[in-house]
Image (cartoon, rainbow, N blue to C red):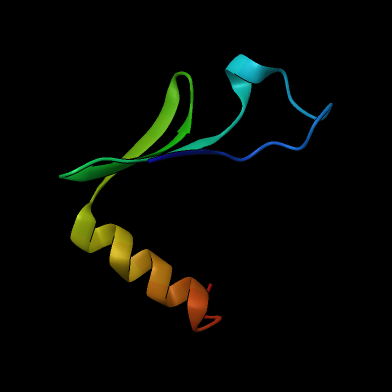
Length: 54
């Protein structure tokens, strides 16, 4: 699943941040500026966001 984090008219499409959820990893970022997380790391990040820790 790939989610593009842009509002219409705010970003230039190739520069829009993306969350790309793959079978074994999650890639977050834009074109040449990305962070690759394992599924376990991504789940920890999600929980911290849900718990208002970050």
